[in-house]
Length: 96
Image 1 (cartoon, helix red, strand yellow):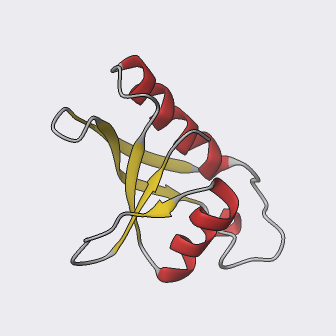
Image 2: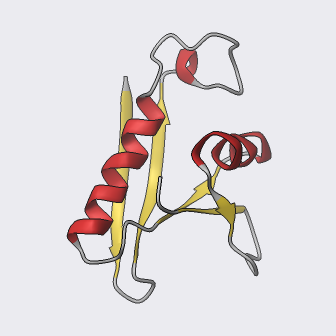
C-alpha cells in the first residue's frame, strides 16, 4: 500500500523524506476520490515524529516528484518551497 524512507540530517536539523510512494489510487493528483485516504499524511507524520525525537522541532524536508505533488503538499500539508533549490521541487513541511 505504501513505502517510504527517511534520513536524519544533522547538518540541516531536519529529517529528509528520501522516498515516499503509495498506491496510485491514493495519489490526489491522479484520482478525484482517494481509495486509501490519509496514507501520505501518515508517512509525513511519521517523518515529523522522527524529527521531534531527534530534537529537530518537527521539521522535515522532501523533494516532490512533480510540480502537481509540490502544489498538493503546499495546499494540503502546509508545506513551503525551500528557496535556492537548483533542481526538483524541494519542499519543507513544518509544524503540521
